[in-house]
Image (cartoon, rainbow, N blue to C red; front, side):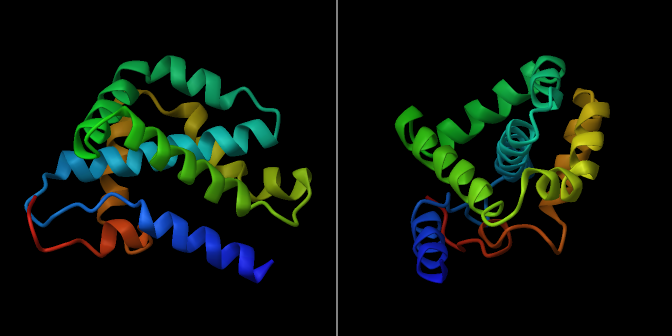
Length: 147
């Protein structure tokens, strides 16, 4: 199991978007938004919950905007799809060894939060995640070179 987790981490780091110091706040927000939406999709699916579908309907335009930003940053749909799939795989791996009940209990706050987010609240939440000390390493450890 440790080898699998290590291999997944290496794969994920190999395809992480590399935001440069000159990237905008909105580009960093797009990355965090897609991470959040992907995590929500995986959790909602595991819990057989409708939160993800409802969230997507409420926030459709904002999600599409974030996706377009990442597609541009990653230079195309294929790279975006590969990156987004890796995010989903990593999110699913976090659930390995847990029962569905455990996953749903651990992620109840996320599901509740997402069920209440309209586009304004979603954007505000994502903006706070960019500067959060708990932000993924891909966000915290930025390249200093601009493309």
